[in-house]
Length: 385
Image 1 (cartoon, helix red, strand yellow):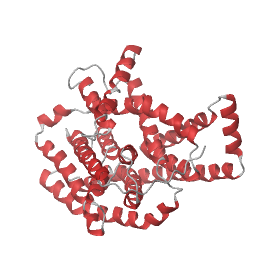
Image 2 (tube, one colour):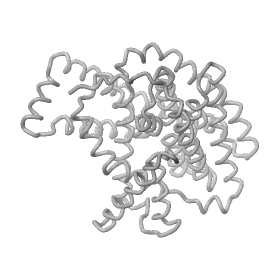
Image 3 (cartoon, helix red, strand yellow):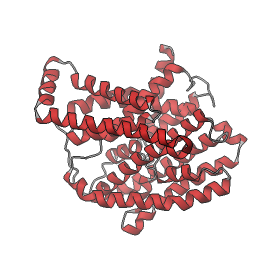
Image 4 (cartoon, one colour):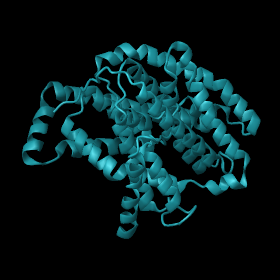
């Protein structure tokens, strides 16, 4: 990794906001960053390589931060969320049940034998994608609030389930690792709540603001990376570490100053770098060598849309159901684990990501449609100064 390459990556990251400027397209910023990664990667220009150690490590930091910010945006402290929680949980469960027969059919049609993995993918939702879309389009109201627990639960459960589904032989170890990460996050929540009640967090905040120490940012980054180390040691995706810690911070109440600092660090550098790395890691040529896998990728995307539209029977707006089908972290984690363990067929990891890209395109359109029929109720801002 050189400064020349780093400057190219930073410039490339501007493509995301440029493509997202037009409200007519309604494209999420990450779509532009993924496309630039594909262009800069081995597929076309060959300017960046996802296997470069420093680039890959910085991308993992970005992944952890993206998931942390996504978790911290879940309005855990909003009293209305507790009212919406049962309905959101029920819808997530209904989607999970609906995913099972579709996954079995896909595994049989394409002859892969990975029905369990496909069920996890079809049922998943990406908080890292969906929450920024909701924020950017200013979607509010009870229907959107009911969507939040559905997305958060689906994301967290599927993150835990991926290693169990992709390698059942090591399911016990993966489950223990996930429990270790979740347990650490629960302990952190208890500690953070104690510091909040005793006024320690407020004292640190005032000292940091007065002396310009950025102590809250330093402490939270240290905790996040420590939790990521636990995840890495126990062979669990760091996305679980980032997301659960983000939920813990959201439950306490994220100070606005810390939120601004994390936004700058994540959205200004590490987030775009991660998505560019992800685009560069996609081997689309493998799909050309195995054309049937193109059909698998499209079928996974369409299947995810179909399963997430099932809650329409329970009164959910179709546009919000389609928005909930957006995937990213779970397919990426599945593809990465499949490559590392050699448990997926050649080209199958790219097919999983292709399916995710289909859902991202669907979510972009669905978000625009939802914005046109937005609920006028104001959103509750529970953050603190």
